[in-house]
Length: 364
Length: 107
Image (cartoon, rainbow over all chains, first blue to last red; front, top):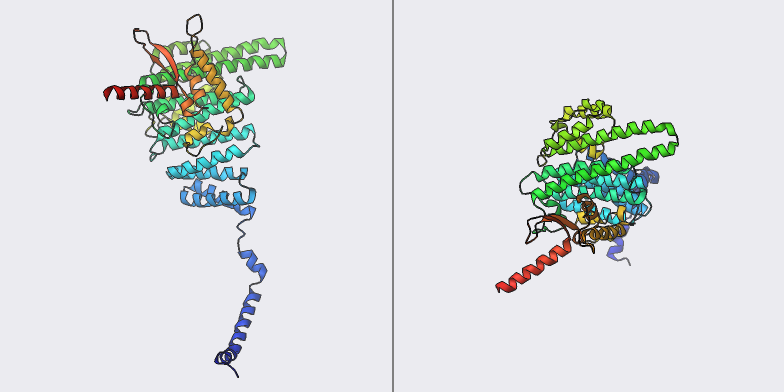
């Protein structure tokens, strides 16, 4: 005897068969190959790369939200595919930090910075060039953060940019030696950073920040006065020029020794003379930037002993120069090229700092 | 040099890997060198103090409390200012001590 439920199931059987047929047809139409082709493989290596590129493109286009989404996903994929301590993560994290900084997401930026430094600590295999590129990128990030109009603590980021530069100098000294010419661009960049710091110091209420804002808490009661901070900044600039002089001299002399020829003495003397004139010019610039006209004139007179330096412009609005050069021809042409960008100011809180100087520091 | 979660990004920067291999040693040696430069020798005169640039470079490599602050101070009983360099931790310890002394006196 059949139960009511059994009878019911028998009566539904033809419908079930028809349903099965439809399912079979549908499965045949959507072959496994077609399904595979459409379903994205989220752990595909190429996909992480695609997301990174899409994130970079969005960052360049100014779509910061999309950039963050793509870069965040790229980081996760690299983490899964390449490992927790993989170097592949560095590029998307760097890009993500730029996106977060430009979007003014300061707590998120701090989190990313924390992860970035944590990761750097664990990556052993790296080269000098890679480390210098990282340092340059971080310095640029901190600089742009310092200029961001919505940054609640710009001095902290400027301070971090300066510290990155000092750390890089220490790193090059420890790796290549204290007299290596690779130090020269970083020494001059240090001078440019001092100039930027002095401009921020000009703003009332922002003195002593170098010491007040280094840590998570503001420290007060023992920091330098504005006058002392300015004097320290000026003396650091002069020390950096002194170091540039020492290294450049040693480099010229080392080249002669390497050449091993006696007839290079005249050539060396000419180069040293040119170096002296260039350094006098830069020292004059540095004095002019703090309105010490007497000091500036004395140094310029020293530079002008070499006739070729007469034509190098030295108007205050063109100072400081973007890079360190000793060739008067290059010095003249590069300084003149800055005339077109005199009015391109970088940020409201850094009066007198033009975009030209920032471009030089960013390596554009 | 270790990175701590409580460190701010700028402090973590001090633990940057570019300094990891020698960082602590450099910082430690630099600290000793800088401070040996600050001390007076047996003959009684003051040796050359670290320049502002040397101090800035050293400060970039160490924890905030290990940093050095140099400034010109006019000692009591003299009108001649002199340059003095101190560790931040010493300045803070001294400040704390003086605050406590003041509190005790005012109690």
